[in-house]
Image (cartoon, rainbow, N blue to C red; front, top):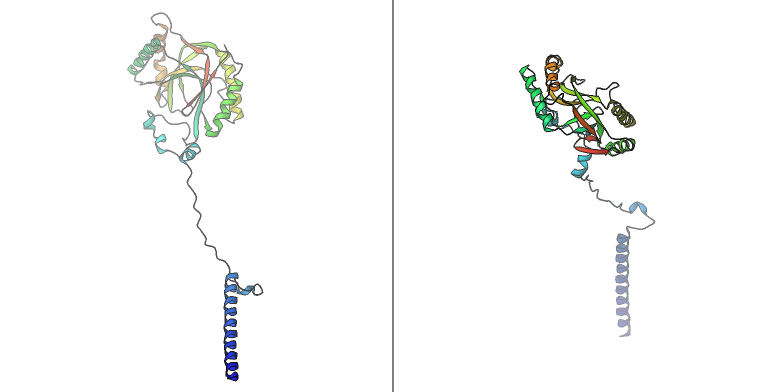
Amino acid sequence: MLVGYSSSSSSEEESEAAATATQHRSLSRKCQEEDGGNDDSPEKKKPRIEEQVPKTRLPLPGCLLAMFPDEVDPQTEDSSLHGGRLRSFKHERGNWATYVYFPYNAEEEFGELLEELLSLARARGVVLTPQEEFHLSLSQTVVLRHHWIQPFTQSLRAGLVHCKRFVCSAGRLKVYCNAERTRTFLGMEVCTGHAQLLHLVQVVDRTMTEFHLETFYKDPSFHVSLAWCVGDLTEQMKECIQGMQSLVDDHEEGPYVLRLDCEELRCRTGNKVFRFPLEP
């Protein structure tokens, strides 16, 4: 009885020992899997593979694209949209046509005289289009990049800070043609205030030079443009200029004199207008 009991106990102990060993081996394998293997056997480690997520570039907001674009708008090059006029330089978005001038606010009497002048020109075979706005230029038309506008106008304002306002007048008709010979103008040339205008041109030219832009003409003929036509019609215009001048000289109340109050210089760049009031 005792012997049988001992044999049975030994078998149970062996079974328990085998089960315990199996459990230990199972736990050991599980720990190795969780730890990535034994630290002493790096060749058995499985490298971690990271999923490569493709990077996508977010589009820029439209307001930023509008500030510094370089594309050309085909419609802006269509001369039929501008009365047949051709640009002196290629239009590009981000390039701003810019010039400095004194505005002239036309009176009713001036409008009536201009209509008489255009009627006489038509009778001589020259069809002129009146200017939409009348002004006296103190610079050539130059190209500004958008990011130049603020420093450019600041430079102008600083140079004009001590300039005085004055009055100039014009009364002599003259024919002008642009450098490209693509447009002809009828203008009224300044006869008083020439010295003050020259001084302002020097101020404007300093800013132009600072930004490496073209300065004004060396011997300028200051004038207010009245009307224009496409092409170089200088000779045809000269044939009827004397008759038109007679209309100016034989005006109802004596020779007509265009009076321009030079109180506020302006700079137009694209669709923006900057104003620079002169000192009293």
